[in-house]
Image (cartoon, rainbow over all chains, first blue to last red; front, top):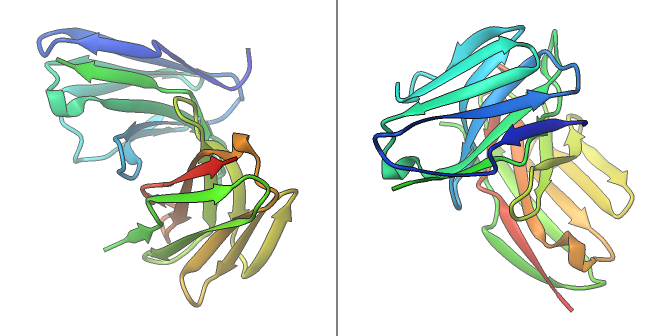
Length: 115
Length: 109
């Protein structure tokens, strides 16, 4: 397998559920990202892990919790979500150099629906 | 604040040429990216410009004017498979990406 893979592709959950999104990159990159994509809105950066250290976006609610056990794997743990959290969640990876990240490689995303 | 503007939707005819514009306002500038995203799929990298001018890559070209805060993506000899959303993103002085909302391109036979 090559590139960036995300599971599951689709997820429907109730507001009281706990679920996790998984991302795996096979590109040897040193940075991984979670983005939220809502219809007709710009991509929203949620979290960045660079060299396995987390750079957090302070505007992300605590009901979203990332985990990066190693440079190839990234998780997004979800609990007590709200209907407005329904969106496409994209994982991406890149190689970070001394001048910042190079181009991003995205997974196909998890389409999340919160009921 | 930082902002990217691009048209929400465009329509073009198969075999024709279309230009998708992007204007940006960022704190500093370290390059501009274009990505293509087919419905239900991952965004994929198309081009990167950091210097003024035109970068050509097959049927796709990307142009940058730093003084005007302006870029465009030019698609020639349009094919039905070019129907997709095209995302513009500028990198600011902290190397953070500022994204546009994307332009949905509809190709008609």
